Amino acid sequence: MKQIPLDYHVISEQESKEQSDAFYSKMNKRRSVRVFSDKAVDKGIIENIIKTAGTAPSGAHKQPWFFVAISNKQVKQKIREAAETEEKAFYNGRASEEWLKDLEPFETNWEKPFLETAPWIIVVFKRVYDITPQGTSKNYYAQESVGIACGMLISAIHNAGLVTLTHTPSPMNFLRNILERPAHEKPFLLLPVGYPAKNTTVPNLVRKAVDEISLFIE
Ligand SMILES: Cc1cc2nc3c(=O)[nH]c(=O)nc-3n(C[C@H](O)[C@H](O)[C@H](O)COP(=O)(O)O)c2cc1C
Image 1: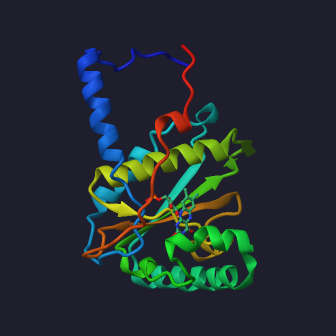
Image 2 (image 1 turned 135 degrees about the vertical axis):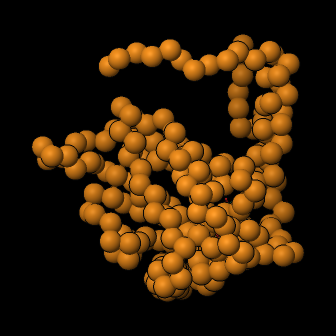
Image 3 (image 1 turned 90 degrees about the horizontal axis):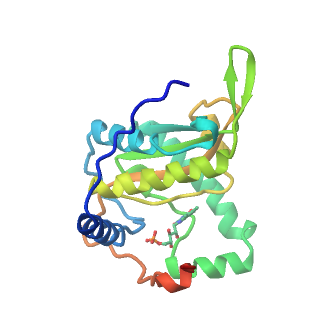
C-alpha cells in the first residue's frame, strides 16, 4: 500500500503533562446515566460521535463495526418493548443469584424508559465477517476492535457534553430483527444518548487506584 507522511506535531513534555492531566480529569467525570431528558440533540453531533468511533484501530483495518442511530419514536418504542421483554425474563429467573446481587447497588430493574426518553439510541453491531462481491471475507479480532471503537464512541459522547449508558439487554438479537440488519452483524451494545434528566443521581462508585490497575516495570 502507498505510504504517506504521518500527520503529527510534536508537543513539549509540559504540554503533554497538562493535556494528559486535563483529559484524565475530563474522563473521570464520565458516568453512566439511567434517567434522560427528552431534549433534542442535533444529528450532526451524533454523526461526529460515530465518525470518532470509526477512527478506532482494527485488526487488519477491517473496521468490523456498524452503527445504527435512531431518533424515530416508533422504532425507539419497539426497541424498548423488546428490551423490556428480555430484561423481565432476566430479572425474573434468567440471571443467577450472584449476578442479581452484584446489580443491587445500581437499583436497576426490567423497566427501561430511557430507551424512549433519550433523543437518540445508538446500536453498535459487530461484523463477524464481511460480504464481498467474491463471497465472504474474514474479520480478525472483531470483538477487540469493536470494543475499542465503543470506548471511543463513549468518550466522544462525553466530550460532546452528552451522557450515555452502556446497555446490554440480554440476549440482544431482537435488535437485528427490528433494525433489519443482515445475519453477519451481531448486536454488540445499545447506547441511549442525550442529556441527563434534571437532578439525576448516580451510584457513589469508587474507581480503583492506579496501583490497583497497573504495574510499572522500569
Ligand atoms: C459491557 C457493559 C455492559 C453494561 N450493561 C449495563 C446494563 O445492561 N444496564 C445498566 O444499567 N448498566 C450497564 N452497564 C453500566 C455499568 O453498570 C457501569 O458502567 C458501571 O457501574 C460503572 O459506572 P460508570 O459507568 O458510571 O463509571 C454496562 C457496562 C458495560 C461496560
